[in-house]
Amino acid sequence: MEGVKRGTVYGPLTMAVVMMCAVVVMVPGVSATRWTVGANMGWTTNVNYTIWAQDKHFYNGDWLFFVYDRNQMNVLEVNKTDYETCNSDHPLHNWTTGAGRDVIPLNVTRHYYIISGKGFCYGGMKLAIRVENLPPPPTSTPLNEKSSSPSLTSRSKIVLPMVFAIGAVWDAFLRFRY
Ligand SMILES: *[C@@H]1O[C@H](CO)[C@@H](O)[C@H](O)[C@H]1NC(C)=O
Ligand SMILES: *[C@@H]1O[C@H](CO)[C@@H](O)[C@H](O)[C@H]1NC(C)=O
Ligand SMILES: *[C@@H]1O[C@H](CO)[C@@H](O)[C@H](O)[C@H]1NC(C)=O
Ligand SMILES: *[C@@H]1O[C@H](CO)[C@@H](O)[C@H](O)[C@H]1NC(C)=O
Image (cartoon, rainbow, N blue to C red; front, side):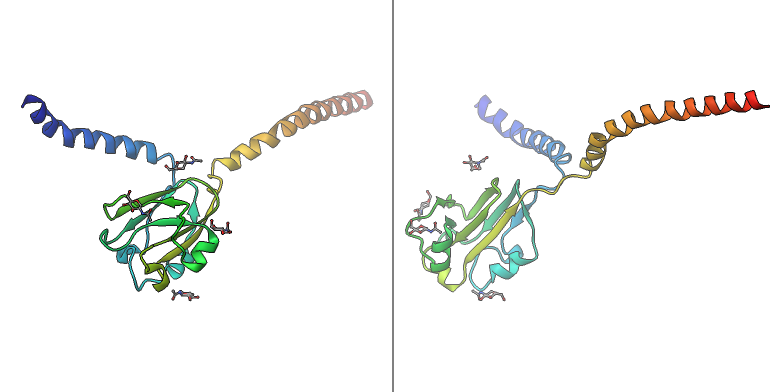
């Protein structure tokens, strides 16, 4: 009994702690996006997922989130050929968990082809995306400058003493003259 009570008390607390940690972890990670496929329409019929995806950039580290009627549709990853022909006989990956809420981690830079089986692909329930590498964060610009800065400093190490040396010689020359 005590254990059950503790579970119900600490459950939300643990969730809050986990979520706070997730926020802390995600803030420096900048831009991992969880894409709800089809936006507020979800994963269903009568949505053109080519149009949904066309103005979006999917980056390595993002997720696809499928929300759908678990009694009807499913989420299958297939190859390009099977995407084009709506063949769900040999999926590369069955992402269907049974809850009608499935997540695909886009953790490889490549094309992903996802269809719904059970005949829905033929009606347009298919999604093809290309996952790109995350563009370099702003901090990479100073990093690049840093890599070129040693040559700058080493050059100024040579140039500056030379300027001083020439100046000193010139100064001495002038003093000598006047
Ligand atoms: C996709 O898989 C099918 C069946 O395994 C195969 O015949 C086809 O050549 C594959 N297509 C690609 C592009 O890999
Ligand atoms: C995909 O996996 C789900 C859950 O394990 C299972 O119910 C379903 O039959 C599988 N579908 C295919 C096409 O393999
Ligand atoms: C990508 O995620 C899948 C599913 O979580 C996992 O099986 C796979 O090992 C991951 N691949 C890489 C390269 O991290
Ligand atoms: C979705 O829209 C694209 C671009 O307008 C079009 O080429 C394609 O045929 C449409 N797909 C479906 C299933 O209607």
